[in-house]
Image (cartoon, rainbow, N blue to C red; front, top):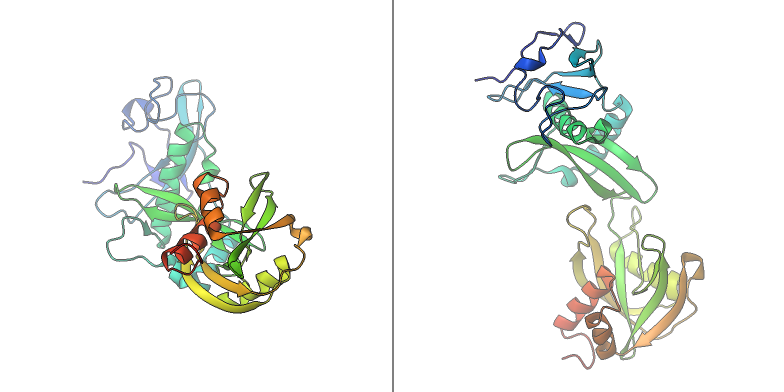
Length: 314
């Protein structure tokens, strides 16, 4: 059985006839009845209604309406959530890095690509957002933000509970995750005291950097050592990939242990204010006591420790 709104939709002009709010489904209660998350209950609030047949989920229609004098009227234009350029950029990223858009068999979250389903997901999410007093534009899919380092996309998805919505995530602008390297000078670990703008605080960390197009992770690790502590790696041992935030970012950074024989000045232009050299046991104590909170440093140290690569930590 299909779920429809109690009014006629005119596809040729993209508009609805007047809607009788007394006959709307529960998810769109009449104005003034209240009920958090159940609909719009204030005047002059945008309401987006979607027409989604529950048996196929293949057709969707959207309308924009305003509430005036306790009556609901529809506008003569659809509410467009994204420009063609934003969607074209999204499709270009998908074509360039298809592995970031794979739908694994049986995965709880399925990315939607068929235009009518994308529109349906945007409409459902927009209705939920507006009902909570949030901007409906937050439901638009495509490329939301982009700079030389990161890309924020919002995918249209089919959720585990069967509903449709949009879901944001962060991609590396270069397509490469970058590298983080744990430097070992003789038997001690080299740490940077770095001021991070994101947290507005100082952190003890290991050298790391964004990935660059065409640069391998191991070469990136060598370059980070040269730039941040003016050191050359005598050897590099791979410690595997590391996801620092699986809930928001797709970036996988490669971890390394580097054996170095020299140490120079820190890269102050990047906010590094000092270099500290500590024994592995002392670093373990600092991590235990919360003095190191950087996930890459904790990850690289833990991997190296568990593999028996740190002196005095067997």
